[in-house]
Every structure is written in C-alpha cells, then in structure tokens.
Amino acid sequence: MCGMPDSASWKLPPLILHPFSGVNDAQRLAEGSQTNQLLQDLLPHSDVTAEALRKRILDSRYREIRWLYYIGKDVVRWIEQCLDFARSQDGLRHPDLRFQSFAALLTECPPQAVTEKLRKWGVLDFKKLFSRAIGINTLFAEFPRFDLLSEEFLQDYYSYSDSIFICRQNSTPFLKLDAEIAQFEIFTSGEYSNILERGLLNT
Image 1 (cartoon, rainbow, N blue to C red):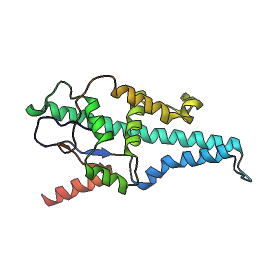
Image 2 (spheres, helix red, strand yellow; image 1 turned 180 degrees about the vertical axis):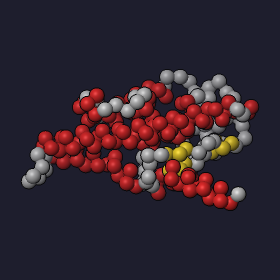
Image 3 (tube, rainbow, N blue to C red; image 1 turned 90 degrees about the vertical axis):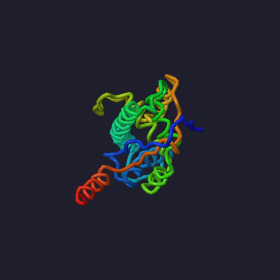
Image 4 (cartoon, helix red, strand yellow; image 1 turned 135 degrees about the vertical axis):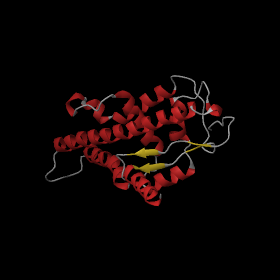
C-alpha cells in the first residue's frame, strides 16, 4: 500500500518518455526472450545455427538495455523535477520525501490514468519496465559500448537491473506517496510536443 501525506491533492510534472513510441517498443522486450527460447529448445532451423542464435540474443539484449537506459534517463529526470517541485511547496517539504518516494509511486501505484495509457501502449508489466530502467540508469552514467559488457551481463541483465533497483530503494527510509494525492500524466515526446503546439496555436 502507498502512504498518504498530510496534504491536499497536488499535480506533479508530466513524465515524458522520449525513446518510447508505443506497442513496437513494448514488443522489442519480448523479441530477445523469443529468440532465447529458440536457442534453449534447439528448435530445428535449416539455415540458422546455435551460434548465430546466440549472437542474435546478445544483440537483442544490448538493444533492450540501450532502450531501457534512455527510458531511465527520462524517469530520473522526472523524479528530479518532482523533488524540485516538492521543495518549492511549503506543504510538501518532508525529510523523507526522496528519490525513492517517486520511484515507488511510478513502479508500485501510479495514477489509474497512467496505467490505462501504458496498457494502450502495450505495456502490461510497467513495474518491471520502469524499475529496470532505473536500475540500468543507476548502473551506467553513460551508455557503454557493446564490447564493454560481458556476455553474462547481457544474457541476464534483467536480474542485475532488478537487484540494483531493489538495492537503491532499500538504501534509505522514504515517504510513500498515494496516487490519489500525487497526480501526474505520462506522454511520449511526440505526443507532448503536439499538445504544446496546440496550446501555442490557441493562445
């Protein structure tokens, strides 16, 4: 359960995801798993060898990690904006309102409108998406070249990113937020640009 701070309802800055364009991106995460299943089952492929499948998996994993890294950059930027916003509001200043507060809000109990929008985009397990994006972004200050990542990490990056996220969340006490109190919206960058353009045209 999410906690409810002693405050009236307030609206956070919007979360804008620049690398995200919808269903095709959600399917991208499934691609590597499907290829991995082919390798594990050693299904008959007349012109695809096990080594070729292994290389395909590693390439797919690398692209998944890169995608999550840039989503993580947007999420971390949003959390920093939320912290700045909270510090500017007299009723929202709290010593335990931390990075982890907004990370938990996003991954555990976002507003219903946000979860519904993510489902329309094809994202059913948003907790894994955002927690892994934060984990990857915590691990890498800059996105690494392919040859700097071990095959072990590429094969099982999701377990490592899950562990990093849990470690970061558990590193300090934090205030939990309730989505009924802390409201926010989520947009792709193209969608948000269109909204801004319409707003400018109406002024």
